[in-house]
Image (cartoon, rainbow, N blue to C red):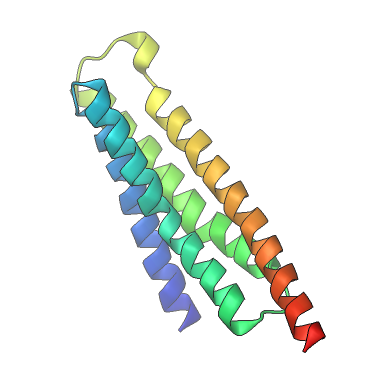
Length: 136
């Protein structure tokens, strides 16, 4: 069951990474681009939100497994997919030199920021629910 969940998370994250590149490269106006990037960030957050709910509902022993799983099955596939999508886009579309790589850098920065925020959320959720269990 765990391996199937990790495979689904891996495929989902890879699709989100590619979708981020589409939302970064294809729209011509800034407002549409920002809205689509925001939606991509929300979509990238879904596996982390599920993990927070798992930590909350099942009172896990530690969060190290969740962090490692996030790095291997959410962050890495999404980054690889985003970089690959940008390389393919650059090969087939003539874009200015200053813009090459910006989508990947932006995605990595957003993904890292989201991931770090959720890791803090894991830590706080785990600590709060452990304390609640001790009080009962």
